[in-house]
Image 1: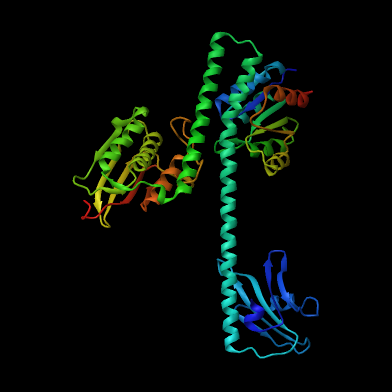
Image 2 (image 1 turned 30 degrees about the horizontal axis):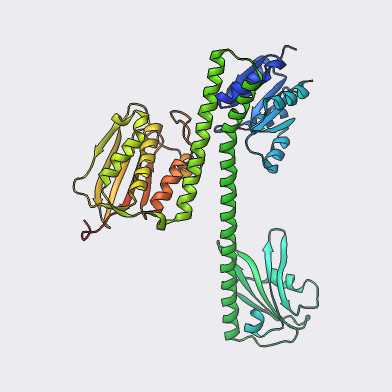
Length: 120
Length: 343
């Protein structure tokens, strides 16, 4: 498949970690802000977005809701990554339309497995 | 208590909750008619009311219990199956009881708010530790399982090392703040502390930023010593200098000015010509784990200004913030000084 996986995280280190982890699944692109992420979605329609819930002052949750409520982008699978792991946080993530909610820290091996399942 | 004080057969408290009226506690005899209390409470205005309902026998009196904003949050009710007189004395007693109940409710609400604050703090602390831990666990797993060339290996190890250092900073800050809060003022070693010495120490703390040449000092001569814990004062001043240097425009001056203030106190102003703060940033400034936008780098933990504020509060110092977006920030501290007899 030609469509990439898009990694959206405001932390450079995490973008690198996730990109390195997911390389076995094909092309991986990265974005650090909501604007960058939207541009990537527009130009390079990803099949999966690995999306950090808090992007500095911006909200990954909001971006997730926006993409999932737009018929043009609602088909993109979204895996939310977050360091907030209370039941209410997970529930909010799933309510925003996310396909999976993974808590930081995560094992790269488990992240690959979860992503592989979503793009299968 | 209401039973004995007012000499009635039954008494209780009804809570006015968003979902409706809830009888929270009742002691002694209750009216036989279902819903009589609810009806009575719903019809009750502010102050004390005695029901005189011909249709339903017995005696009912109630006093409204006010919440922090003056709204009615509960009704204290008295009931007696037999009609009775309710004199001035009894009204006064019921009013006293209602005031006591209001205090109890306010105390409980405050405790709840404290609990919520602690919960928020824990949630944030956990978030701040999980984030660097994600890098440490993730990259080390990759390093253990995959082949990297020397340069790639070095880059990943440097990230692991830096993120472990970040975790340590968060842990140290968290414990430092907890120690200050738990120890209170008694844990400070208050002594006559020359302010200039504390400032020199603070400049030593921020020296690694390599920005001390931006500080312009305007120090009043002959100031009385501050009544302060020298190490904590230097730490607090180091935090504000660090913030002023880090968040203001590179290359611009940061003014540090001191003066003798009435009290006696020492006035300290740290003024920068940086971007200033929006009301949002200003509101969050002293909150734990709050980080303003536009830091020079991502080294901060978001605990510095919370620690600063705690240290200032424990010293009985006043802190004022004068900031306008686009027009810089001035932080003013009024720190208690020792009087003439010590100076």
